Length: 221
Image (tube, rainbow, N blue to C red):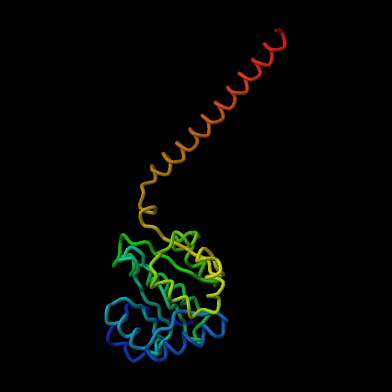
């Protein structure tokens, strides 16, 4: 069984930037999808800022990577560029990397909404386990810089034709404001909903009785 060291990337890992970028691009081509293209310098910058996670094998080989991007003045965070070296895939490493970058994101931006767009079922499953929920595109950042990154995707014309309201990717969101609500809040919210439904049903029932009464009166008049 393979064992990996999954850690926050630093200046010690700058020499891996080129191979990471190359693998991101080749992997996107193989899937028939596109991602916002990044340069090795951009990846190095993320490492120096402490906004990336890297996985290494026991031999010190690069095994996987992911980085943080912020949008809308830090109100939204995306865990982007998740990639695992071909030789280490199907080992569960992607899950470990996602968990690490997710925790790093929450530590650095505790109030930010963490979101993602993906066509991969495996990534959707990982996101769901972390607490993400499927949402509409309108609930994501509306930062133009983010959506500009979709222009390199082969499905960009679909996104554009849908007026950025939908595409082949599934939008998922982790909202700390919702997750941090006390359990009683959910109970109270559900109780209010049930009470409102009950009132609606009662009002409907009363209206029916009134109508029935008027019909009977009209019959005898």
